[in-house]
Amino acid sequence: MTAARLKIGILGASGYTGAELVRLLARHPGAQIALLTADRHAGKPLGEVFPHLARLALPDLVTIEDAEWSKLEFVFCALPHATTQQVIAGLPETLKVCDLSADFRLRDVAVYEQWYGGTHQAPELQKQAVYGLTEIYRDEIAGARLVANPGCYTTTAELPLMPLLEAGLISPEGIIIDAKSGVSGAGRSEKQANLHTEVSEGIHAYGIAKHRHAPEIEQELSAAAGRPVTVTFTPHLMPMNRGILATIYVTLAGGADAEDLRVALAAKYDPEPFVHVLPAGAAPATRDVRGSNHCLIGVFADRVPGRAILLSVTDNLVKGAAGQAIQNMNVMCGLAETMGLEQEALFP
Image (cartoon, rainbow, N blue to C red; front, top):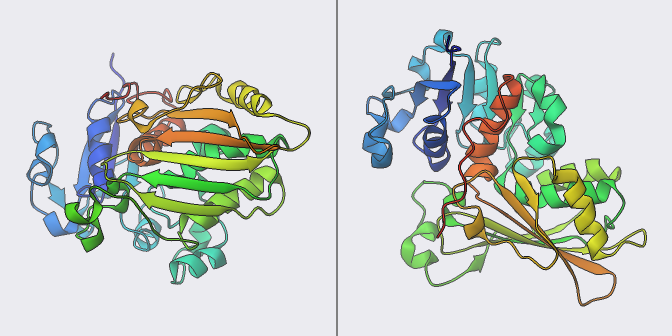
């Protein structure tokens, strides 16, 4: 007898992340999409918004106000930042939720208000939220009702850094994260900076010294180090659709060398299905993870004595967003963690 599939709702299905959730869930044997919302496109089939999904049997898009929550068991929120708190606060408490915005990632609501410029609309709900970096917080995620899915830059940086800080193999001081992202990370809204002629044939830094992923990264690195950690984080926009490459510069500690870092990361992640530490001398590339839920990590000795270089790559729409959200859903609902996420990278 076939087990009943989870009835899933996706709020904000007309964005890149919403479309990626649909693409991945369409082949998930334990999930059935029962609700799709997109206020500006309400009444349309999703295939009219995303033709590549037109062949799927999906419900038409509706507004959040017209959603029927009673038939759902799990909801993904792929809504813009600062719009999700009140929506989730109004959902039935029987629903499990994975939020892909930044609205519940920062545990301290004062820090949220400082970086996002508005009052947190659900501070009591914030206390229930579990940070959704699956490989680090799996046990907490399994018992959670609300999971805050990490940002794409943060996932890519935290996976190599947190185990090394926890083990005392690198110094909490002087960490530099130089990260490059594809344009889909900026969302689907119409912005001059995202036009083809503005992005192609070039690269530019943005959010310099003020990107909102910085406090999220520092929150998690501080938890791993057991003390406050401040990093230098600079994101860059690349003329590609998908992918993040983080080049991370660290100072060695406790007499460790670069190979000690690689061995420690390999021991941490060897049992993991989606995080892979490469052999010595191997450098990961974004094309190695495109379209997949995998993170690849490489470790190199710096030519500067006492320092090392970490390279980490993810697909910002999958492991950096929709894929990790589904991974978290699987954990929250007692399903096999890899279910619906088995696809390998699309190359070239």
